[in-house]
Image (cartoon, rainbow, N blue to C red; front, side, top):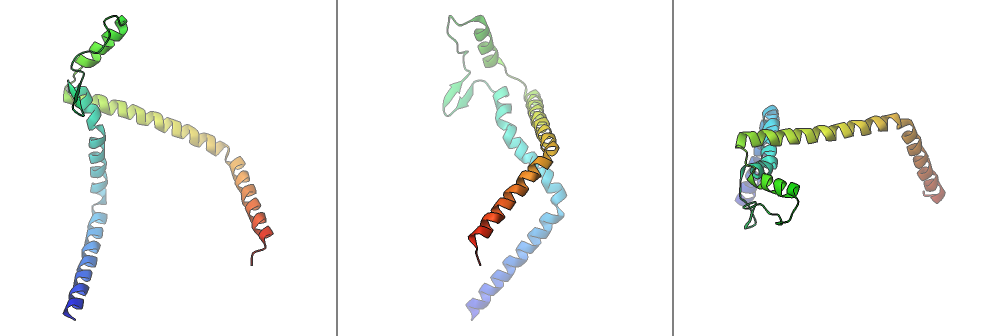
Length: 149
C-alpha cells in the first residue's frame, strides 16, 4: 500500500507541476512569444552573417574562399566577381543589417505574392464555392447510390 500511495503522490505532484507550468507560460505569453521569435531569427540568420564576416570559411573541414577560384583565362567579369566575393568581409554589425535587409525584402516579396493570390482567390470565390457544392452533391449522390443502412 505504501508503494501505491507513493505513486499517487508522485502523479498528483506531476499534475500540479504541469498546471503551474501551464499557468506560468500563459501568464508570460506576451514576453515569451517575442523572445522565442528573436531566438529563432538569430539561429536562422547566423549562417548568412557568418558568410559575410569570415574569410576563409570552413565547411566540413574544407576551407572556402581562401584564394579566389577562377581559371587563368576566365573572362574579366568572372575574375572580378570571384576576387570580390573572396575578399568581401563586412564588420559584424553591417553584416547583420545587410542580412536583415535581404531577409526583410524576401519576406515582403512573399507577402506581396500571398496577397495577390488571396485577391485572386477572393475574386473567384463564387466559382470555387459552386465547384465545392457540385463535388459535395456528387459525393452525397454516390453515398445514396450505395444504399447503406
